[in-house]
Length: 429
Ligand code: PA5
Image (cartoon, rainbow, N blue to C red; front, side, top):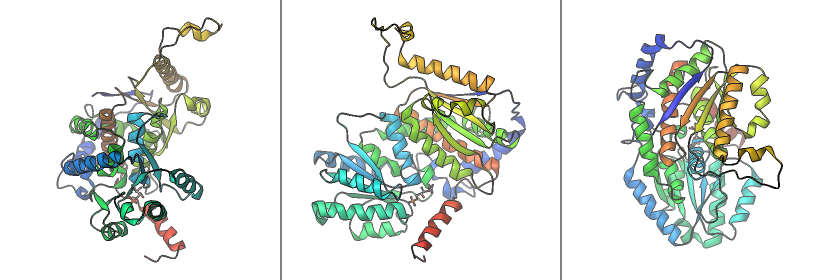
């Protein structure tokens, strides 16, 4: 599995002076005695992060659900409790539409009554199960959605049956959801205490929905394991995760770039970008510091944001992920009835044209547009590559936040929104 990193900028990004700092933070991420060890479960991979027996249990449950024609899973969760699963499903399977495939519907990621109503309306005539995912077990969006959807399910099939269709992924230490699950004998999957929401995609948090759509999670785990080994050195020149972290830090600190645009050339990476935004945004954006993470899908957004990226104000750099081998390809054929330039492309594939667009855009944006470009090329969009990319970014993110001088693993800003909302609703604790 290969991931390549190339830096295209005229700026001098000297990283040699940072060897010592990187070694210090590398130890902090990897050392068993790290002061942050209680947040580093995702990096103790797979020993702490993966519960293999739970995966087997999930597989049996899914097999049974499918046998009983339950082919829709409603995943209720927000932030780190759903973005990873959504990113993985789209990345590995593509966007469809599919003729026949188990379906996952994501709910509880907003407070939109319209969205909830429309999805419940769709479920009226369907057989479905629920996977409610919340580490704390008290986040308002999923809690409210679960309450409404569970009542709906009980009305649809009766309480006894409904209980067998609910799967709760939560902390097994404490929380309202845990208590509800115990009191109602719902199946419980464990959210590991030392793994925060945005670092949880390579764990039970996303595995149940992935298994439900027949994704082989062992391949994801293998990809992540390979990356874990590959990025286990503190040497900046060998460890691309640290190199990426350091270059973005230097662009921010020395050259005042305050924004990063993550760009992909595949629409099925839209939610990968969303996942990445949460990972970096929540990990770095604190103490009035951090690079604002934003994203785009090319070539789609070249027809909307392209103008700004080429010629607008220069407060951002670009990180481009390019997937070398597409899942599917099509050859362009000559249409004799058309007197068109497209005919000159006959014999070429659509993916080759996408690649040309990537080369042309990178050149235009980096050379004429003067935007620093960090290029990440990955072999394909397989489950293994997904695991690799996630591990790459998680390690880079931890390093990047330490370089900035912020705690990568807390999110006091998110907590204060949650607190204020609860106050408005009249809940005092
Ligand atoms: O990264 C985080 O910790 C947050 O974004 C959470 O994932 C999000 O707020 C959902 O929290 P919970 O899983 O406790 O419902």
